[in-house]
Length: 318
Image (cartoon, rainbow, N blue to C red; front, top):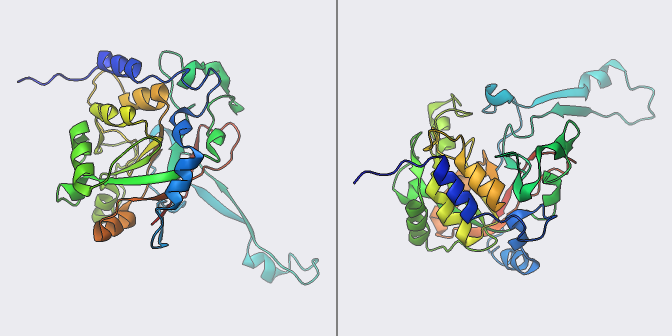
């Protein structure tokens, strides 16, 4: 039987089916984070059993994955005052105390990060029908990442696709479909539901570490979510979806006429926040050891007014 290749018509149909514009009012800027209620936050705290904490962030340094693709490069860190200044006497005018200071220039989506709802546009609109005139050189007046500053806390669920398939990692270009997500969750004995933060491991970071360099990780071919993944996540009303890849979706995309179709369906229309370049390796090892694939996730963004994305140091607490 010939399999139908998804295209712009598929994307428009799924976008319409899962569109949440107006569901929480005409002024909503949270999307499915509205499902993360105080009751769910409290329940997520109850998932902490061992007191073990996992940082899911890559270091913010020049050894990151960026190569200039899409205008993104690795963070630039420099010292304003360092030990040499102390030794040279540059701070001798201060009574007793000496200090060091530093600064950084960071492309906000160059490493472990959240996409804001203001990040993606299609047909001239972002989430909830807001237009591009609301994102100016001063930043996003609507749907900025700062709206999520006290919302990125809740139940985290890891779906470890390659380990479920008895593999170290998926290969670039392999798509994770709805059936793959369902089978993995069932095998792990974990249910994905309303308000969850779902972390999907492809193993691409592990693969690049095994090779010894980032190569074309940023913007190149990658394993990732296929278009049918929308049929898994959207009906379940998840709060956010995270992957360990540069762009969440399988690259090359399945849609020859649409770049990053799930960003249109899930982020822009359903209002599901997306996290990218999360390091899930240590967490995945621990989940495999104890068979527990749910945990408390604490992952607030930086409070940068008007930002359309943010670096994050996510904490998975088991």
